[in-house]
Image (tube, rainbow, N blue to C red; front, top):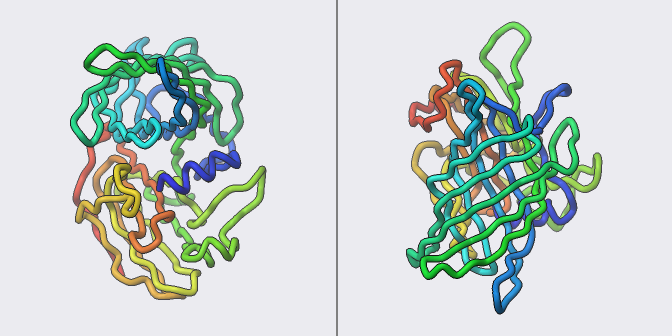
Length: 293
């Protein structure tokens, strides 16, 4: 996943499933992804850095706060998993502040403080500049500077039912990026291994994956494993498609709200994120998932 996200950002391309009238500027009671690259500046070093967050925003009266699903900040070769994130939206989503804890694979603890300001908007995404600090347990401070793309997950439903039935294609050539048949150039290069790789459906919605590639694919659910150079996800055992042969399809129904990430462990650059909405506003992950062959 990190390979795809970083390469796509370098060419200014993240593929989203979004309605024509949607705006990705931060607002209350919605779900977003935030990905970006930048620099980490310490007293003796300057390192490349990146950020990848999935979160929802919850509005209570006049206050809008953040609820983190997953998140990581990478500083050089050190991956920091984000936890206990809190934040506020200000000036109608044009500015936000967040604070969180973070920990690396060795258990070292950090505090992250970030201020984001919007610098450009479009129908499909918004660009925010982020500045902040990363402070370790010895009070050593590293300055963080990012340019990030914020993308909203929006609902795509059928006309006659409130439950979505979405078809997603596994694109030809996804198993072999060298063929470049998976690249779609719309507004700059967008790396697409799935026809839709940011998906939102209501609870009870079904997604059908159609394999248009020349080899079989196996989709599993899991969590991002940024500490590994060879295995970018850890399966959670909730979803496994089995072999989807070329020309065949596989469907899965989601009966619990929350974020789900599907990946292909044989082709680690392939993954897609699904946000299952709930009318009650609950964003907790569920395990009541029904695969259909």
